Image 1 (tube, rainbow, N blue to C red):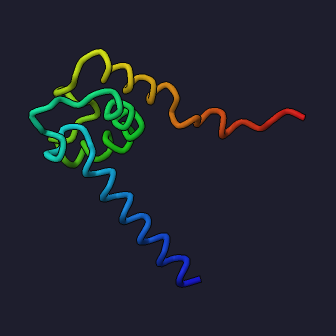
Image 2 (tube, rainbow, N blue to C red):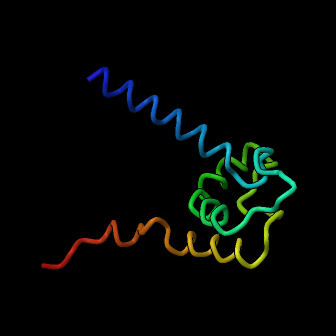
Length: 95
């Protein structure tokens, strides 16, 4: 039981660090090369987390302004609309 809780705590800490290092507006992304499609997908997936973190840390935004344009937007909106398949995961299958 204790070992399972420790594993969950380590997993939670790892995910927190991973997600926070790749948020839009963070210093980890500010490179000379603007972000593209796949970072748009990632930013769309973590948009709810970015919104909450952005309330406490103003440089963090939901949307990365330094992007490649249409491809970033396309990836971002695909991720926002799909929402990890959240609607399909919460539905019950009809028999």
